[in-house]
Image (cartoon, rainbow, N blue to C red; front, top):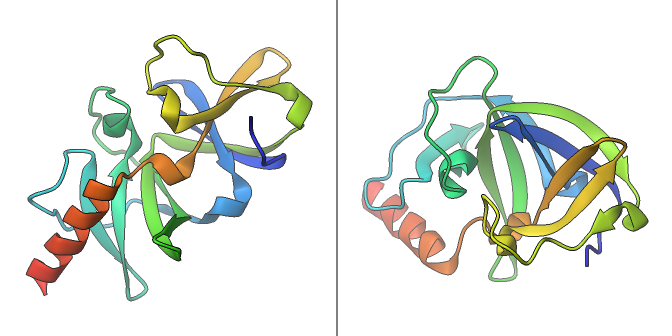
Length: 160
């Protein structure tokens, strides 16, 4: 069950509403120039230089097996903080558009479905219910796996 209650940053991918705990979000930026990392998964678009910090960018559409979509002026990068080997790291997730910050009470959150959905169940912590909407609440820590992190680290070493 979801341990985070309270405020969630919501965003859209293919007209579906997703959310992540607001405390994981550091900032929202427009799309910057991405430096491609050649030997990584297709959903790892590369890295950006954000005020001197190199941050990997993950395209959530591709991570969830959706069709690739050209970035537009509405495309945003949500800079999030994730735990990597007991250290907090920044990562950017590219989304179609950011929507709003909403409050979801624990009683309004159901466990993720056990049947096949468009995205893997292990990426979800629950389904938030708000009036006539369902928000897919992400476990943002699971977007990148250990192999992804190793590949990114190696590619960054090769660039330097």
